[in-house]
Length: 232
Image (cartoon, rainbow, N blue to C red):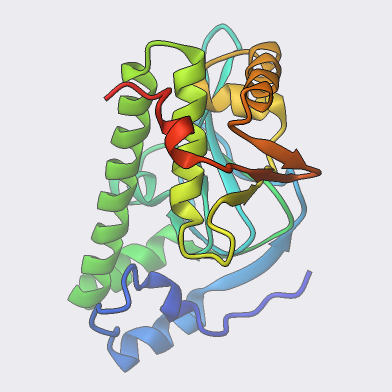
């Protein structure tokens, strides 16, 4: 696996309007960042493992999940390119609170905990951007928990999930389509239901013409109809 450090500073900007990092900080990031390719299923870090550093998704997607005492798995969210993982554990010097695994072939950048903390002390701009990533993680987690807890039925939870994926795809050439890269079991782990329930619900959505599927591509012909399943 080739290791490189090109352009890592760009991944810390959460919004285009943010002030660029100082040149010295960007150069320091280039020196300490290590980027590797990971195959599907590769674990970046595990729940309960002592934090070693932060991971930045450069290409591909990574799923974050937690495991209950009864062995059930709940997928918290799917991290897309540009997202930073493991920030809270690194700043608090505690264990990782979730397991991060590559959902597809991915390119991931790693920065050691000691380097993250050192650069945060040296460069306020970098500390601010790390804090913004942490805030975004918190907001995203709260939203996912709220949607999960406020939904009265599995069908509503699934509808919320699909609408959320449409929102993420809103600026694409086909905003009514999405790539269904997750298995039915993984979708169930995202909404707290079984694989069988997800299979049954998707079949029902198809019969109601709420969705169409062509291979791994899922099409939502009428978003409003799908949203009608979601309680206000």
